[in-house]
Length: 254
Image: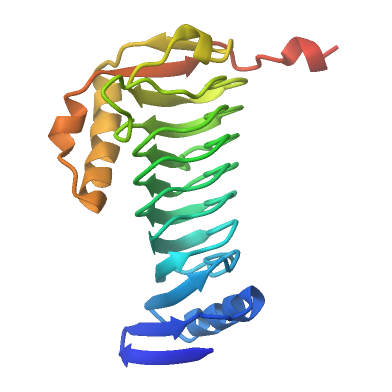
């Protein structure tokens, strides 16, 4: 593993061929020594990058990180110049992940804080079981569209799907959107038919409070990826909300 100190505040690691456990050990050593920004080059499938750092360090990743990028992350800011695989932001507690490509399944799985911005499309079950508690509220912004079960079992947080990769028809293909949702809110730009929604969610237009929330996160998304926030916000959005706090209460309670 080649580690180079380019300048005092930036450390670069050539990760080609480096085993993921060795790389994560090196990252923990650098962060413990006070590294403020670390650039990882030639990343190719190494898992758990950003996990167990627990400091506001900045990781810049060039390549394709492996599963569970930022899992249980608590503070770092990660930028990926490439695609992310499954489990990005898994049970994330605090911090930020920005992906300049696509992401795989279960983005934001059980996240309980922090913010995730994906420029393109994502796989299945994005935002599954995101949750919130007091000031902790995770945010997941998907620039494109998602596969089935997006927002499944959401218990809190904000999930925004902008549909910027859709064609002229602007129809999302995901089904079972918000199935089992019992907290949080989903904002969707693009066409979604009623049969694509879970039975546990209702739909509504956006009020002033919704627009404040949407503007904050769309403005951040646009700044990361070079979009016109005003143009995106000028499109029509729908809001999905949970109809019940305990949709399956009768199944499990006596």
